[in-house]
Image 1 (tube, rainbow, N blue to C red):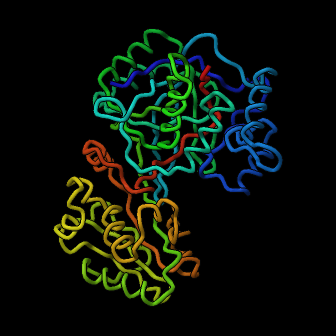
Image 2 (cartoon, rainbow, N blue to C red):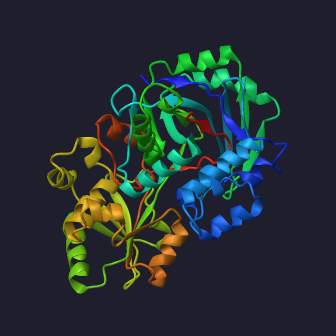
Image 3 (cartoon, rainbow, N blue to C red):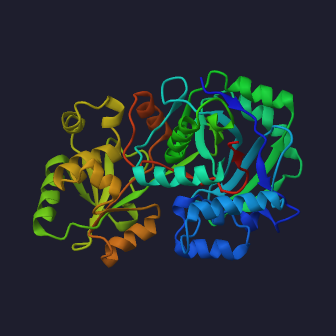
Length: 421
């Protein structure tokens, strides 16, 4: 079972910074150059200077480590004397709807363990580049700067029932992110509450929702340091699988290297062979959640005619993936990768990991514009993977193709940190 512990958190001193809004940032992997500049302009203490250090001059990791040490020495960032867990609520509107919901969860530290039944499971494949980047940053700062987002089973809502009374008071701080989500943060020191939360998760198996690279970095770092200590734990945001605010959005696939006639013909042939093809309007490209079987939207930049592709027979996917468990063979993203990206276009797992000829977009309007404007050659429009399917695939011991899930909203970086020494 996973070991959940309170932590003596590092966090910004609100006496030293204007507000958490001024110093928080999205996760590093969604920040481009323009956004980084905008965040750095908000405050000289914005966490982006640590979590995504500039490489303008010298070693960016050494600079991040030195800056982190300076901010701690000057009490910009302080450490709590007593261990706590930290509650977080996120009030947001589900994109593309007017539905307003709240996601609930808490920050704690979790003992690093190997993947496996009863402890911690991944759900997506990872890539080597981000792991090396995060490892070098961890070595330099000796801290977890951003949390891993994990899910746990709690059908009785016992963990949040213990936490919720503490959220009736003024929060420690708030952050409104770029997408409009209002994040509210509370520190909870009560030993009874912490014990109740630990009891609720006593037999829980954790499923990583976001932050696979960071978790694998934590495993590598713990083994590298060796022995027992703070480095054996990693910062996590934990949310119940039954939480009513849990939202999974799709990530659309953009093909960027299907310009030659042979590739186009191979793709057309595979689609005609394996899928029922239905003409639809552009606003129907993202398949509905209840569409039967494997279903994706498709449009190319030449004809610009939107289509719905529905797998003709599940037996086609079963035959193409005989070594994969049944839940994996029913995944939209796995069938697309196997039959079309790999089978028709010849992309290897390494090509997909390196995004050779492939790009992603989390925004439907952006993906549609990419294909209509010719920024990409064709696009596959996905639907969000149901959380039940995510669990089934993980329990079968499989990792999904990259970008199979997009848990919305993201967890801001800069709310709290976890010292590894």
